Length: 100
Image (cartoon, rainbow, N blue to C red):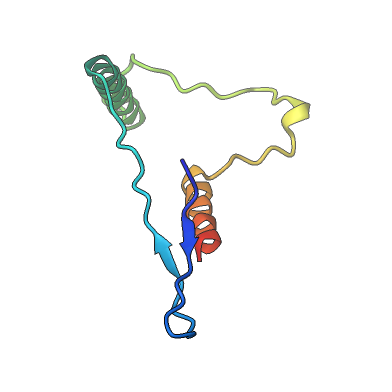
């Protein structure tokens, strides 16, 4: 997406406050096929989560099995998973700071 542009206007030699010219981002268009795929994956995942919760509470003896490595890969010893929500928040704040 194009960066926002700073607009400077001088009236009577005075410096006005900086005005950011708003550039509207194009709307995201989703096809019917995309929406069907998202719905399918979401509903399938909801079923898996329900079945996992049921097997944890002893309601079911069969169903999905959660994979746990018995011998972890030594190359992943110091691996730290990313907190995606935190990463997106940092990206959002950085974008705001760069615009001001």
